[in-house]
Image (cartoon, rainbow, N blue to C red; front, side, top):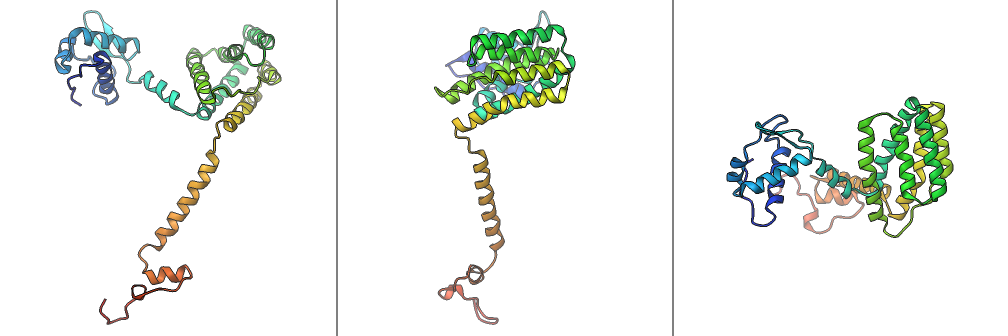
Length: 276
């Protein structure tokens, strides 16, 4: 894909987007050295300072890496900004379903990896949740982060920390001034007990149960009619298949199949030997 000259408005943003597109399209692979600032500036029709700033943005995003004296290289083609946009445009129920999947696995791992420090942290988080009130989002988040921390998986912790913020923002936007149900303290207590016991299956089941009511509440508050939509799609598909089965038959045959009498000369099939 050839680069094109950038417009006059938002030059840095324009260059950033075009460089992102080069990465998305596979024009530059991981480990490749990208063109020099001078080369990019000529291709894009912008100044070298603009290119330098755009490259700096992508370095900060983790897509490029600058090596002093060697140039700039592709570090990753997985664009976190694209993931962020996808999460922000997802529905509240979709986001919660992903949260259930993450927290169920976190609970399983926590049950088999937790140590004394993890259990103390979980108990402290639950105490704070009781004291701060059952609608305190920060206290609830701290509890769930404590569960994830007990997995002792750095990658899991970082992904969940990032994702949990997006969950909150999507829910706030989707629900507006409507309220989620109060936090179920007893369900949180049961999750800790399952993790303490070391029972991975029980911990996973309890994590899913803990999020069942929020899932149902979001579905009700947002008018999620996913199942009804699916039934309607199935019905339309059935009608379409029935219509396809009738394709190629004559008007008279379709009329007879539908229990109606053919009308007019066009509904009659010509006899053998008669001109059509």
